[in-house]
Length: 533
Image (tube, rainbow, N blue to C red; front, top):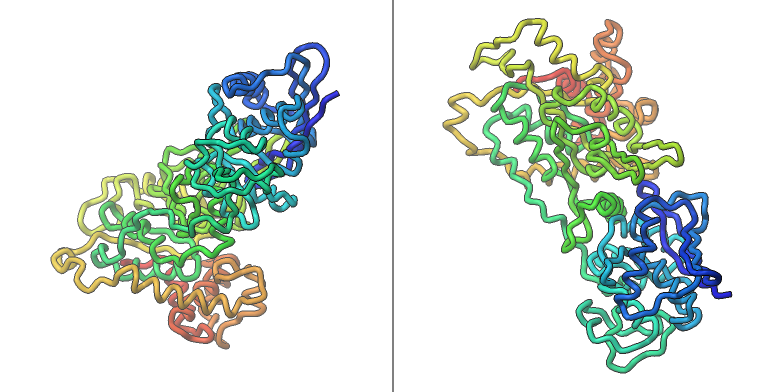
């Protein structure tokens, strides 16, 4: 009887579960894979056999039984290939005994033995680290993100032959291409003088870099004083924003400049965002760590699964999860399907998306800043002063109702953005503040919020629950009297009153005041009710 075991990781959403890949060799020739594999994983037997033979290793001519334990967790994807291949060779006696104990291997195999990149390496390595594993093999293209996890020894492998040679302690001529250092003791193999092994500790990796996205400057926007103020408030307190107005007013321009006002992601936030982008397959190979708030701008024809995530077998994050800790822009928001817009209620309230399937539930963090941009009617000119609207009153009402009441009620700021006047066009951008100048005020306001909310689960005003805000963060006495009048007449809901109070606190933080007064409350209500820019 011949038996060997190594580790791999099964991903359910962005959460990983350590899986033991157990291989038994003995009996009549055959190959059996058990442990709830999906179709892509069940096909691994053909890829693994071809890759092993092309790497110059013999294939066992006996029955091979591969068990993925625990068998109760569904296993999906092709990243189990390398683990299966190495464990088969270990069970066949082709590797030193015990060399793969406590080792996690990730990667897809080509028929020629090449180790190809896979999605979700960062969350998988994080799960392995949490389970006590300290050595991991990943595809070379994914090595940068794997090395973001501290206290991990990482091999970025280009081929199955390279992994086998390293585990055997043999000299490998092409390992130098990984740029790694010799550390044979890390895999339990004897050191080879002058050999470039391919293992590298996480502490030797290059420093974090941004996502490289060029964010346009707020100084490019002509006029729009009130709309610029609303964008600044939205960035300072993490308040959701609705921009309404005729085409050409600058709604999309303002929304695209919002990420440039947000501060850099903190370390744990950067790892969260990077893990999601890794799972979605949008993480650039040369920039393994996302340090700036992301920006997602799905087309209005996007499906519900494209926005919130989904998939029949392997659930992938959607645009809402990819915008975690950043900005989600829904341009031409009424053109999105009503069911697509309504599915955003859960992440707007709870900061996460739950995708339920018969066998499991996948959870994705989705605490984004929502920006809705909308025309006032189908032709876009209702309420404007430049062009006459050709829509009937019924058409205007039907168009505005595409944004449901529950979605509108979760938006903190509503601003009317009109087209720039001729005078403003002639003046151009002279005197317009740059994103850098506004970002300084936003950062100072967020620092005040962080100090005030220290010791709580929240760090910005927009995330504080209404009861907590009313109980512990009351404004100056008598300041809420106008809001109470609107509540009494039904012009404002209880949720709307809470959001007015949150915005008032953000306005006070931007002004450097200790508590919001009547002026901040009135401005906050005006920003929620809608202003003409």
